[in-house]
Image (cartoon, rainbow, N blue to C red):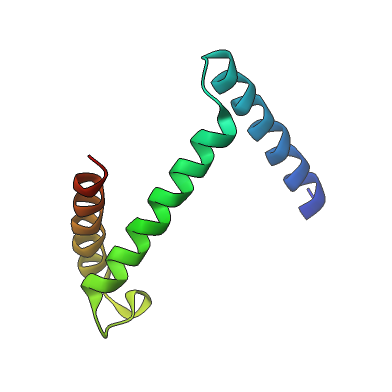
Length: 79
């Protein structure tokens, strides 16, 4: 399967999900925007927690701890 075919299949899947979300009374664009902002905040907080260290250079267990802490802090700040 070519890259273009894979992208087309992924696009159809995403459109199907958007239709289901809309059918549930939720604006899919607003939902995606909120999720994107939340992910951005999560990544930025994880980078702040890591300090001078690059997240890419950390061991998986260190990354997991930082990611979980960032997720908790972002979630708390959203409430």
